[in-house]
Structures are given as structure tokens and as C-alpha cells.
Length: 95
Image (cartoon, rainbow, N blue to C red; front, top):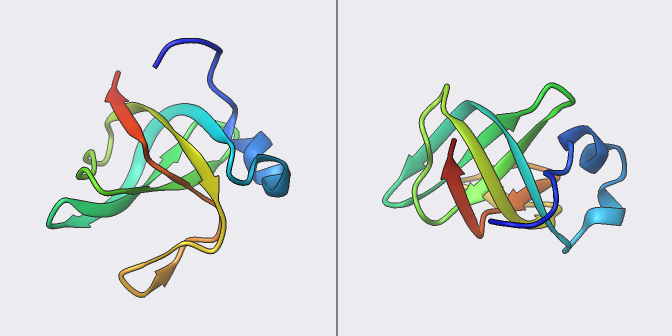
């Protein structure tokens, strides 16, 4: 995860169609997480907003500061719950 500065979550939420299917990097604190069998979702907050992250690699626990990279997707459904605008995690790094 090198290169440009992280995108503010608020910018993604303000204009999700602009970011749809584009890879972004955000960083913040995990404020909620749920997972089972290596898959799940967690919510990251950066001071400008909160966004769900869908993971197939396990989820970090609440309170962890992370940097996440992946494409922005809409209409994500996981374990019967809809998450609206989310990031499909390509990788995350605990900070």
C-alpha cells in the first residue's frame, strides 16, 4: 500500500457514483466488526464519515486503527444485511 494519500470517507459517501468500482485507500478506526469463517464486514470511521468494508480475509477487531484498500461497491449484501456503499477489501494493514 504505497502511493497517494488516503481518500477521506466523507468524500466517498458524498459522491459514491464517482468512486464506484474505483480502488481507494482509507484509514481510520474500526468501530464495528462481525465475521465468521474468514469472511465478514467491519466499519471504519475517519472523522469525516463511516464506511463498511467487506472482507474475505477475516476482520480486525473494534478499536483497531487500519488502512484499507479496495474498490468501492454499491448494494453489498452479506449475511442477509445490506451495506449500501462499501469497500470490497483487497487488503488491510493494521496501523
